View 1 (cartoon, rainbow, N blue to C red):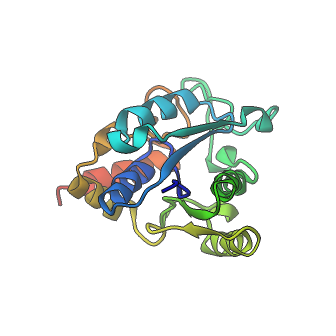
View 2 (cartoon, one colour; view 1 turned 90 degrees about the vertical axis):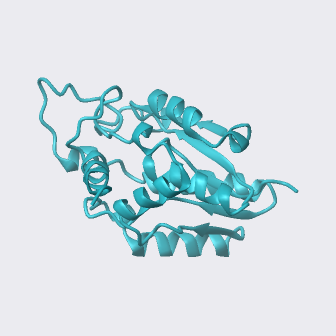
Length: 207
């Protein structure tokens, strides 16, 4: 049986938990990591390789489109010097990033004969970008299914980070080793939207 299901994976808490969740359910999939030029790509990929369930690690697909955002001033591309620079959430915007990620995953799935694309996007209180909205995902999913027959599945879409973290603990995910900082590629900054969501969830796990 071919593995036509694709999971967009980054080494973060959400997608790593989804990899374990899919594995537990017996869903055959290939994890897909996209290097779109993010400054933390090397850290994300090494984390992903360390944390993925062993049975699906051998099916990992890495796609490099790092030149697509050449010249971008987004702080997702240009790493911030936290000692000397101050940034806000608008500095982290990267145009069409989620369209790019989902299109690459859908193209890979469709090229393998159709199938499903799993993403671990959640209901974040700190994600304000237009391409993180429910309406955006619904329209893009409809387009990909109508033209190519690929189904975009978002099982965690209406879960909170805390709910995903609790699921991760239940599944035995090493959630403390996941990485999802948007600002620093070495030590999580603790202040970007991804870090805030993650730290809030981890701090509430024992409650």
